[in-house]
Image (cartoon, rainbow, N blue to C red):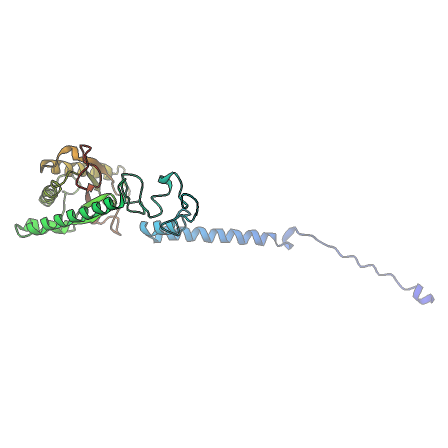
Amino acid sequence: MSASNNAPVIIKRKKVISGGGHHGGAWKVAYADFVTAMMAFFMLMWLLNATTEKQRKGIADYFHPTIPVNRISGGGDGAFGGNSVFSENTMAQNGTGASGRHTTANKQAVGASGLSPTGAEEQVQKMQAMQEELEKALTARSGESMVSDGTMRHIVTRVTDEGLIVELFDLNDSRLFLDGTDTPTPEMEALTSIIAEVFALVENAIAVGGHTRAHAGPLVQDPSWNLSTRRAHAVRQLLEGDGIVARRVQRVTGFADRKLVAPDPTARRNNRIEVVLLRSEGPTGKSSAF
């Protein structure tokens, strides 16, 4: 009995440290978030450097919240079927046709330009007919001279929302303008003569755009803007000299090197002129053939 009363009392004191210092785990979470953010940043920088402009646009469109799942309806079941009463905000995006009269190639849908679907189809058919007419004119002239044979390599045509685009471009062994100037070569004069002859069959308005290639290095003064604009005006003057009424030309634009078509920004293929037969009313305000 006395032995148990005399047993020593042992008191164990435990020191508890709650967080803080290098013993906590909060810093690991913050560090992991930082590393993840840095990895995402470097992935973004790599994608920007390794992809083309069209690929980047495709990636952006994929994550764009306004792209509809259904081309006919926005998903709603109300009076407007999911579309806003402000048609400019939705109609050009959902594949049912643009509500504006002057649609562009940047729109997802082929705009009806204020016409009925039947009228829009007729416009497309007439544009395609004009494209075939232009190709026939080029083919018919191909046997007249060696210059005409060479000019056919410089031209590409396509039908877009905006109208019939006739693209005239440089080749490595043949130029449409003297280097660094807005002086047209015989090939360019021959091409504009053929285009003016075909475009004279209708009264549609015309737009001319000039494009140049990029320079290999930085320049004190970039001549691309002035050069592309001067070349576009030179083509306008050639068309008017070949019989195109001056009032039909609605737009003359210089794009410099901002809209490249070749993978190499410095390639001569980027030196080009785009002559557009617009799908709109004629310069007099009356409905044209398209």
